[in-house]
Length: 210
Image 1: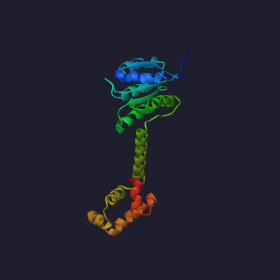
Image 2: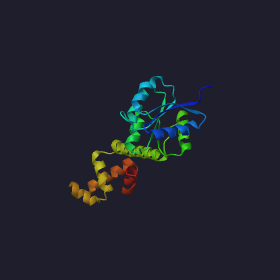
Image 3: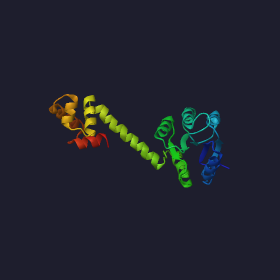
Image 4: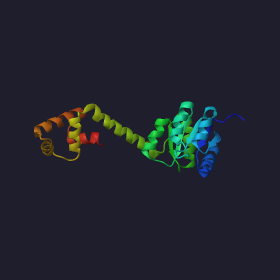
């Protein structure tokens, strides 16, 4: 019998989940589960010679966690696609996994057809993610963009003033707090508005603190 299109390895320490996921995947006639592992160390020992296209990796594993396993496996087999399959939706785990080399992140409990679709997607060059995870990633990039605006365009004094404005302080209150004139505060504020290309305090705050 000829090789099927997508060969998958599963790394999961929960036997019931392992059997369940295996059963779901093997219902698709283009997927074959090539091997399964109950921990990351056993997986890493054979990854060099494992004939596999996609690896589904749990995070909470005995010994080495799944993120560290992906990091090491990606060095050994960079062309294999690694997808996290986990219960964790913690942003720290998401970004650690992506930085380690994962190209997909799916939360356990998704409908069976969604998991099968995710395997096909990652094999075809996509980056499947649960909708909540995708929103988390987008939100993080937006925050990074706003931080770059602050770092690249505003001086430390202007950042501090914008913080004060965002906290609802009036020009006079800021002037008294900093022991400077109201006109100096206004001058700093005008510089901020010009750099951010806005016309009002509200617009500036919304642009930097959406």
